[in-house]
Image (cartoon, rainbow over all chains, first blue to last red; front, side, top):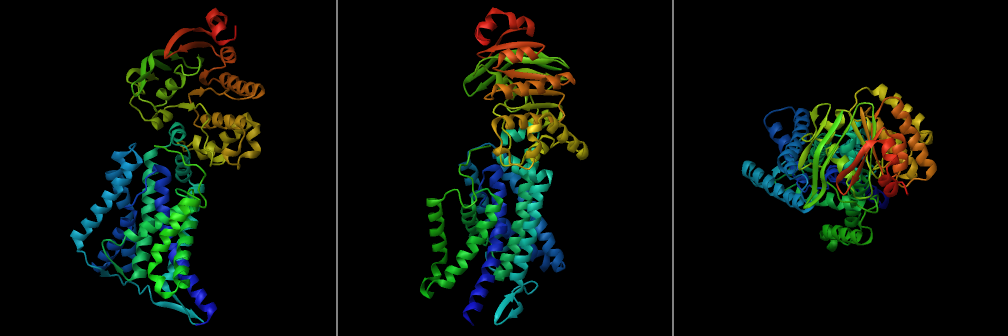
Length: 299
Length: 234
């Protein structure tokens, strides 16, 4: 493989991985911007989505129906999570809700382990990893094309949503000034539920892509992506949706090219380098690339 | 229209309001004057549903507001333009105005009302796409009042609309309040700028350390020695 071809191959990989990170991070950022809650259980929504799709498919539901239903179920799971776990704690300290999110992680991961067992299951629907086409020895798999195209469509729709719809503008208003949002008559619960629903739908899509990429799923599969999304959110500026997208892609590219450029004996430390990057950004530019200078406390 | 009786509000252990009573009749412009920390904003936030009173009642059009959420109070026709403006700094001017009408479903009329607000405050005309945070203090105050008007309130509450503005801008703001009064809007105006507030209002209340200490028609208050020495500069 030529040098250019190798570079291009890695570029596609990075774009594809970055797309998934961006999708997960948007959900994390949406909820954070409104509630100042870092929902670490967001990764488990990916897991719930993937399990739902697989279980529906195993039960004989046509594959596209299973995918659609699984993603919608994921959205509903996010809404239930807010209602049951976070709403009763509305107004409590950020540390309390953060710790609660870890409790939700433990609950969901162990719950799914109890229900479906701890084993890794193959996730091979639609032959997602098979190459669709190749240009000059570069292989581009279906999953790469789907990840990138789907993410671009979702980003476009998200932009329209937050710019043009009343509920989308309300989300930005609540993130901007909670008191003023109350005073103009925004129904906070509607905005919060919408953020959880939409973020969880995206987590469902990301879960599908993540499992399809890996060709497998398991109860703890949400852990790594949510930690990565946390890093991406910090890179982009926590709570900013454009920042989430930028952070997702920066992280995707950083990871892929770290592995490509590092000597083979250091490649195993990829994630360590990612976290060094996190520490570096927290030290140098804690507000992230697109984050505002100051972050006020609210709710 | 609005009747507040024996209102008591605490911040933690500190009592901010010691039994406030006042009322606003339909079509009236009523002012509450008082110095910093007297409890003016606290009273207004309790009416708007952002602070829960420990005692007393707030009745509006014969319904109790005390147990309602802020958005329900807005839907009943009360709009508070808060102290310090609190516009959405990262939203455009247009979006700020849209958020003022967030509960309305008559999209076309909302657009007409945005034109109306812009006609009240021509300064905003060429800035509809600008971010709220980039406006000057005076423009932000205009936007805050405009946003409060966008819900088509039956009762408009203004908290210190003249605070920190140049005399010219203060005049401009008071001209708009006079205009709103003329078209029949009920206004509750809270001000440190007692002179102009009493000039425009029908009746007034004086609030001191969480209590109403004087009340009466503006013409009477304006000429009272106590008000003169404490709030009108002698």
